[in-house]
Length: 450
Image 1 (cartoon, rainbow, N blue to C red):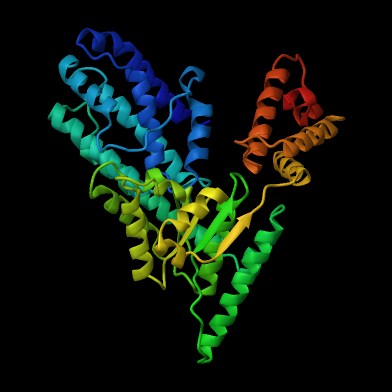
Image 2: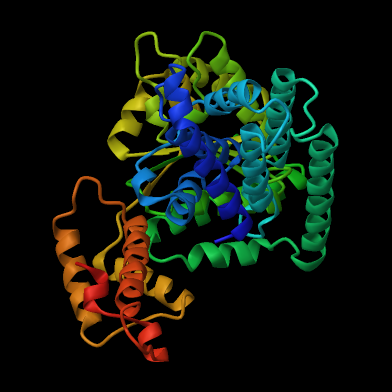
């Protein structure tokens, strides 16, 4: 937990609760606190390039009160969040230039959240710092237009200084990373791929593809004819089977092979491509395509783009297909999703089927592989299973694999189970007068909760 983020969010939500009676009195019946929480989650989603769902889930668990954790971000992010607009108008009516502005609390919270993610060593590569500063500037300019020259609102210099500071810090961090963390070689990346738990068929397919690209590169360098090999891929498989992890490794391998210039992975889903009005979807999709140019555009649950009728998903598909045709040398697309719907999706459009002629199937993990995944979580967090807990977990995984529920998420479920066990362990240990080192590092059957 980051104290600055928590304090900024607590101050904002406390202010929202305080002004709710005033809003009701002037006819605004919506829950301003709930609206603000949703918009904060929208903001995190907006500045996230990858890992969005996990980032939002962790933020809710860490900073949002349990009673509000049911709130989910919306699919669209407006230029001016509604709750922020309401607070700006309320500032204009109530404060007359005195005291702390509600809109300033909102801006301060956005600054702390964006600053944390943009400068975090774990998140910054998956955060769009430009979007953060642009959104902050847009909101600040709107508050100024409502509140005119009120000195209690964040000054222009504050936003500019924040933008400059972030850019300088990011540039510095990037230079340090270039010096201290050299790019991984093809051999190192392949070792990472081949060391993944399970996925034997996937590893074989990816290694064969890489070998083909290597030999084609040699052929080309020696003046031989090179067959046209599509680098676009279809990943078929259930959730939590490592599709995104493998896609990220492929993007880096493609760069090392010279297939791609940058090798970044831009992860999107339907919400990241499709807008609600005619013409907007193409613009939204082109923005993601430009972001992925020189790397890979990874579209999860791609079959949701083809809903039929007057849906705008087809506009996104057409835009992507055109980009694939116009940028054959420096743009790769990987589409992913459940096997059945993905096969129907590819069959629905001749253009899709002709461009995605290479499919890789990600099998569900076996009970032993799931146990191994759980063990990895334990080892990476200095945790161990208590006596008899291993047997209990193995029995549970065997039953789980024999009767897989429809929403079973493979490795993702193992991560959720581990995090739940940590939470249960913390609740159990908090009741003890004295806690030994062994108890701190031990997960019991009761902790698993299965």
